[in-house]
Image (cartoon, rainbow, N blue to C red; front, side, top):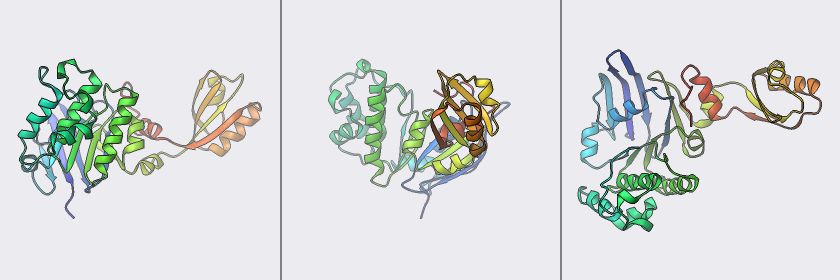
Length: 300
């Protein structure tokens, strides 16, 4: 089976900055892959090379066995940029119709509007749309050519909670047809909820690649949560088996290298602790651990 896309030994330097350093990733048709990493990790440069917008200094990109240019020419790839400019004076329906006319094969305009959830404002000018509505229009433009591969950069930026929910409902319908999706996001909950696989980048390199559960498992430990009256953060951090403690209004969250030892110590020192819950490390904790030296300011 031909890969949906493959990146082999990609490298890209901008002056003194090594933006991408020997990145290799293979994605099978039908996968939904989240590309994660702090700001400056190399995500955008990697996406640009996948789309043929930037030429790698080394390595090779193949999309369905073709070069990025050939794949784009055949309409196999749809891309949604976070800040792609829309024609302000065109209505949503007119803009989707214009993009449809540029493709050799395309989905019916009405179907695209319905799939992207923008039919309700098809007659509104793009300049009158909110930031979240503009994102959904960009999604419609990425869908119009009925691509086999969708590449999305921060697809739900500027959307409210309901907008994000409806967007991912549309994505589920699309991926149910066996299409492949690569999306870059800072919203780790979205990656955890919607991706089949996570590729985590740091300093231009891939530091984790696999199903969400596998990436979480790469970071040992558990998270212990409890209501702990009269505790201090310092006292909780000093408990045996605890590597990090956060205390807010009596609610403690303890990152534990050894949760069994930690809970014994907690109940010994704070016998009134209640509502105790122990869970596996989440994707956010794994992200922080795997990108610890550059994570500051990267999460939203």
